[in-house]
Figure 1: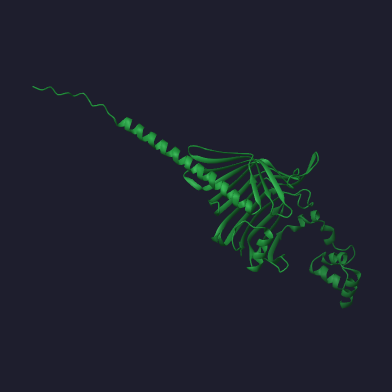
Figure 2 (figure 1 turned 90 degrees about the horizontal axis):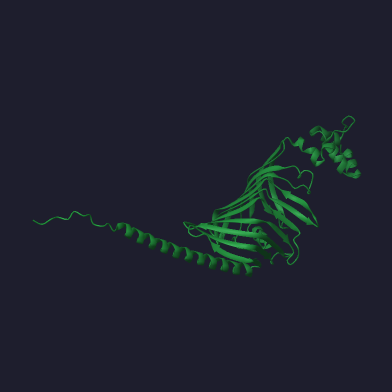
Length: 340
């Protein structure tokens, strides 16, 4: 009688699984290094094209990392020189980090390390910008973006004046969003832009701008031929020739208790100036008048309201005649009184 061997056979599937995982890891590493090489080549080509347009980008050192799930390009001591600008302008910041997930290569996220200096090429910076965090995100290919966002937390802008800096602008948050509504970056783009400001102020510009304000403005730009890099004067000429316009679909600005809303269309006049109509509504304007210096101009005259055209202006809006008295010449006032 033959004896049956019931000893279980050694299972080999764990070894097969290990081999498959090693092959997959090797293939993934090869794919990552191929993608990293393509990114480096793409960035080099982009820099070359930009340089031909007068925008020179430089890095003191450039490295690529992020393996295994990200591709990161780190640029230390980053600079850009806008030679096409008149006069030329140079900007330099501490570092820029550009990152894309391997499974989402068409979404590029960039972070910037401040401060950023701005000034004449080869000269010390005259304007210094800084922030707590600064990030941009681009959806789509670099040559054909579909959506772009820029977010800065606690940005500041100072004018360098020796040992002391003069604060030009600061905010709790600044956000700019743009997206393609119609067309493409290469042909007839229609772009929607959204600007959001939180607690923004410009202390040295005017007493009114020194008071923090919040803003939420949405506009649509129509009339661009394309969105390729070019000087702004040339772009403005294209807009004017194509009867381009800016549609302010919604604008809301709040400063203290004063709230202003607006909408309308703006185009370019033959002389290159903004031309159009905006419908503006202001609530609690009287709270802002002292800061603007208009409270005394709008104050009624100390005597009784006079007769004649100036009195008629005061009857239409108290203080309106007083503005006319202070700003009109004697001949104009005499002429109005004669007509009256």
